[in-house]
Length: 235
Image 1 (tube, rainbow, N blue to C red):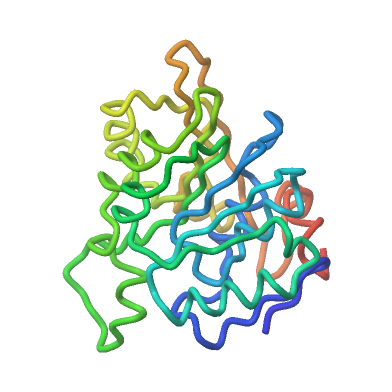
Image 2: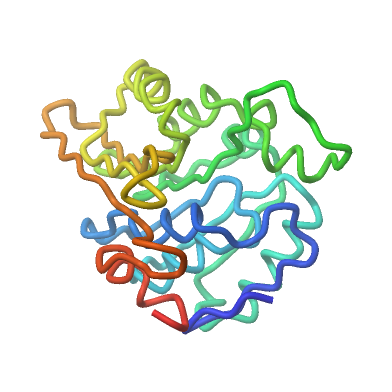
């Protein structure tokens, strides 16, 4: 179990455990536009949906998870949270969900699978959670373009090396980046992740910045502490 300040995450049945990527996306994603409805695509434990329920007054916080074990665990984590009346998890593939759902969402988030190399472990559940074939970026972007409300925001965390490709795919669906934060583990290491927020507005000015997580082992930067202190117990 992973304990945060306002909720707990059981994760023994999930291939992908609570990690920095999910926490970053949940804490960083813009909510200043006061979303009424939120969708987390590829929910895993339900972490990001729970973080956004804590950060916003959204009345509808939906999550989508294809893996049955992870889906059941996310449902339990939702039920045991202070926001259980606002959280709901769907057990379906993305294409099925897009075909059946008529709702639009004011905020769509995803921490998608992204190991595109030809390496697989012997654990099918973990591979589905980690490899892009399970949910190609093209499918994710197209789904977001269909499900996003006119003034909505689509927010992702992806490997920095995929940033250009992902932005190009989004542009093909008329989604335009307006905020990018590039994440480094320490001041000396290379940029590892890109946090990107998109809107439908092609005129938006793009703001970019950089976030360093640690100065040294477990010595977190003031910026990372400020971003995550509403969640981590020891921040």
